[in-house]
Amino acid sequence: MNATRAGRILVTDDDAAIRTVVREALRRAGHVVEVAGSLAEQRRAFAHFRPDVLVTDVVLPDGNGLDAVADLRAHQPGFPVIVLSAQNTFTTALRANEEGAFDYLPKPFDLGELARTVADALRAAAPGDDPAQQEPGEELPLIGRSPVMQEVYRTIARVVSNDLTVLILGESGTGKELVARAIHDFGGRKEAPFVPVNMAAIPRELIESELFGHERGAFTGAAQRNVGRFEQAQRGTLFLDEIGDMPIEAQTRLLRVLQSGEFTPVGSARAIRADVRIISATHQDLPRLIAEGSFREDLYYRLNVVPVRLPPLRERGGDMALLARYFLDRAAASGLPRKSLDEAAALRLERHNWPGNVRELENLMRRLAALSRDPVIGAALVEQQLAAGLAGVALTPETSSLSEAIEHHIARHLASYGGSLPPDGLYERILSEVERPLFRLALAAVRGNQLKAAKLLGLNRNTLRKKLTDLGVGPAVRRPD
Image 1 (tube, rainbow, N blue to C red):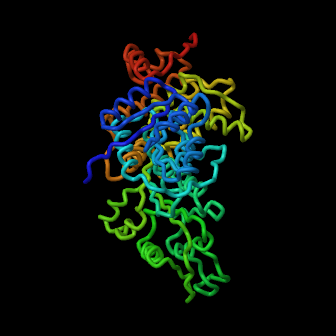
Image 2 (image 1 turned 180 degrees about the horizontal axis):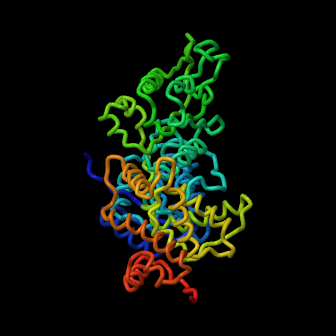
Image 3 (image 1 turned 90 degrees about the horizontal axis):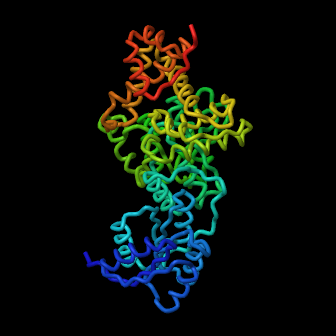
């Protein structure tokens, strides 16, 4: 390994504190550093300093740093630019990649990571690919600014310009198809079809015909030729959702297609060239399925060229209110009454465990938009609907009693982590999920009379009051007897 090469670094940021901290950190790493607080100062610095690497913010007092990146790389295609931004959205990461930035670091960033990125940029300084000219649409395909989502954005930004096979991993409801569509819509195949296939929804005996098509008379009931999903997706993207549910025989056919680049419809002797990008997704633990013999290891390595791990909603920190308000806006755009969310309601959303993830949150926001009489949604209504959702969803055809419903819910929760374990404190989280709706509905049944609620629950009144305080349920209005 070669020692890190010292270089000349220009840092552009309108925050004087950030300029100072970054300058000193890079100087300690042996670099010569100049700073600028605006695009105008950056242009003046280029006139006399001639840096090897530019580190720039996006929002500057006199313009957008990404516009300057585009202009700079148009004249110096190989010049490395590292983009910093507090606008931690998918679009920012994507545009930084499109404009040819060497890397994108969301604020707040780690100084050690920045120093390593600068060192990598100096080592890799060479003419790069021409930046793509496409502009992302106005509607964001992915929402969130949490650190875990920044890693997702950065990975997506690095794969949109190539045809590498991507495997998206995450619990049900985290938005795996949204990620697949974003990779397609912002990539080189965006003008061609995006064809999603849910492997769990296709009968086992029809999977090969569904994927590869069949000729007339290939089997009983094949009255005409059928075009399979591979052929439908030619020159585009084939998204294989729930790939972990694919039968082992179909896995073998898929592996052959990935190896040879050709597929043959059922009942046909002609091979068709497969010009498709493959993106797959699953909520299952594929290494565990491999160990059990239900998933091919060689297919796993073919699919898992670039893994994208989508975090569950409960790990996305400050994204909750941002997502909730986004879904309320979407609900209003679809014809439901326009509603907003107060801070207490946003905090209540943060405390929920979200077993259904983003899909569950979107459904809740649509329900709240439809049911709320007030223009501002409060915590009490959120609490009520979360409790109603638990009561309405838990009893399914698979469960005929409350005990079975809870067992089914816990089993799904544990299975969602695959071969890993959920965070410590499961007992308290499960109890709080059950206790909150129990106490709220018990209070509702007795119209807020805490004495009757205590008797109904078999608790003394002091215990009931403590529980209501600890769980954040109530206070309820007591109806006069």
